[in-house]
Length: 241
Ligand code: PGA
Image (cartoon, rainbow, N blue to C red; front, side, top):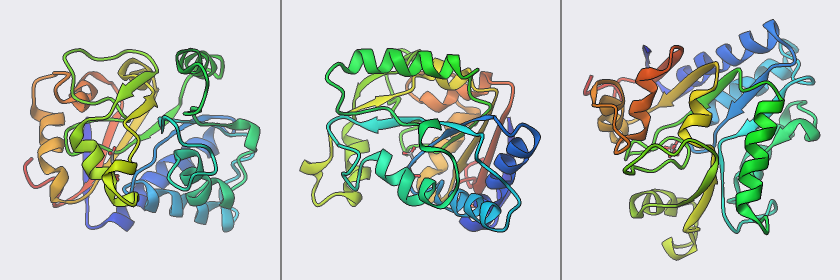
């Protein structure tokens, strides 16, 4: 693992976006793994800037998002499909048919997960995956558990995650209780990973990810076993290292 500490969220976003830009410039038809949450937004802003200034062309890129809430349609403004279009896709030139976000309203969620896993494989796997980290050490919606879930699957959200995500909904009752998410094994197959974290609230999770036991109680700790992980965080998130 490489850990880089930068002064603020904007600088972190620029650093992560530069990694994406480098990947696309080197391999224009690369596969990018994308994430939702507040932390990646400055990365997406910087990726948009690269497009607007003509430095990066995303027209041959394929993307796969980590996860989606169960029950929210694409039009729901808290669905991750909507988030990604609002924060990135509407402002760059990835063709719509090359964008993959799990469908949380599929009739058969298990089949949706299996099909997603197969689509990632068929695309040749993810070249560079961005991750956030939850206060409880989750990555994507892989919550603390007794075992690491390998493949894309349906999950029930923990009380802590529901509480953390209530800020985006009218009330906690409106936060979906389930999600579909890439599994830990799916994420670990990415050729390179960049994890972004900001704020003191993430300090314990960042510490446990790097120094803790590799334990499904802190899902991010599995990243210790990945050969190409860059963690980019601010001083607050790095304060327990
Ligand atoms: P955040 O979420 O970036 O909104 O803090 C990160 C996560 O839960 O993975």
